[in-house]
Length: 108
Image (cartoon, rainbow, N blue to C red):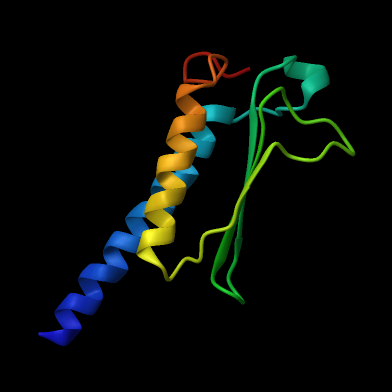
């Protein structure tokens, strides 16, 4: 029984991580997202640090430019479902607030 619950929790954590990556792709699209190319469209960075089990999500609401600090930094631990769920909620909110978020049809 314990193994089954552990597998179920692992699956839920992986689903949340996949959702975070999906949201980053939804906001960015698949093409380069530098401010000089896309204007003021939002940009999201998504990094996974496997050695510490942590995800880094950085957002730039008016687009990324070199040397500019991100507007938002979210650092959920990949092994904490509550932190992953909170990160998904926050990135969903950022996406909803970003009228220039890309969709598969309009990414440049």
